[in-house]
Amino acid sequence: MEWLYLVIGIAVLLVAAVVGLVTTRGRRTPPSVPPGGGTDVLEAPPVQAPLVETPLVEPPLVEPPVEAPVREKPESTKSRLVRLRERLAGSQGGFGRGLLALLSRDRLDEDTWESIEDLLLTADIGVAPTQQVVDNLRTRLRVDGSEAGDPRAVLRDELITLVDPTMDRRLKVSGVDGKPGVVLVVGVNGAGKTTTVGKIARILVAEDRSVTLGAADTFRAAAVDQLATWGERVGVEVIRGAEGTDPASVAFEAVKHGVDAGVDTVIVDTAGRLQNKQGLMDELGKVKRVIEKQAEVTEVLLVLDATTGQNGLIQARVFREVVDVTGIVLTKLDGSAKGGIVVAVQRELGVPVKLVGLGEGPDDLAPFDAAAFVDALLG
Image 1 (cartoon, rainbow, N blue to C red):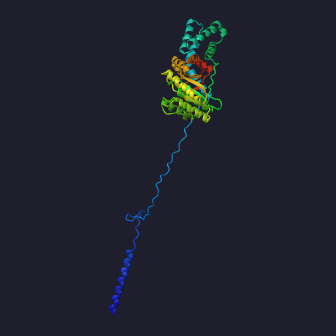
Image 2: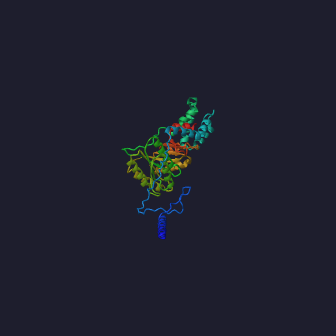
Image 3: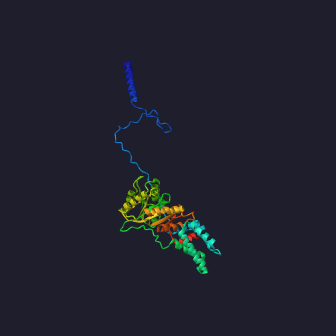
């Protein structure tokens, strides 16, 4: 019987061992974690959730904020006038000093009067005005003698009379019946026409007027781009068309926009080709006609380069025949002893010089004043 109990005990132990082995193989030993905290490279990949198809939607494109252009603040008219008079006195002072030196001689003989006449002629005053000034000076200084007064005061009076302070030099930039004033700017290429348009806009903006610019010089892409740059600097809208667009259509749209938006003034830049006077006449005539379907042209400004002398007078004659010029803008008057062109061009056209430019700066344009101009000439 003892051997039977021994067999049963061995069988029980074998069964227990088999059960334990199966239980152990059914469990997985958790992966060991290395001291550094990383995951064992033999770790089984985690069970992923089943993929769910979703429509592909691109995230919205966020545009970076666009900074508004910095608008320059124009100088006041008073400040601009003071600075320009100083520049004019510096560039034209030799002319005035030369005249005063001749008139201050103890003896005014014929040689002296010829020298005075030559000096006036070289300043582009013109033959007839020069003769008028010399005759008046001879009478007042030779005949009247000491009663004429100081030679400087006499010369000043004669030059002011020559420049004619009685002319109406106001810039007509206001319209009627609630419509904008329309300023048509004409002149040859290279005279500073487009730059003048931008500078006039600055003057008007400084006076708190609303302005629209029309880039009707469509045959020169550079002119259109230049005017657009001025518009950004001053903060005014520029109406433009594609290169080669009919200038009249651009002018029409600019004035139409001005009427619809209720702006105070529309300034239209025009082409300045002189190769064919008839073509120029037809083009400017058409521009003016289509503008006046919207509003009256209140000012036609002719821009002339003061350094061109007699060539400037030839240009003035052509434009006088083409369009009704109401005022003159003399540019590049600095650095030249040609101040007399003011007198010559006024007599040639019978219209006043209204604005003068004496430099490349954005505020180097100011209203013309006869007495201030002569005082600057005389230093």
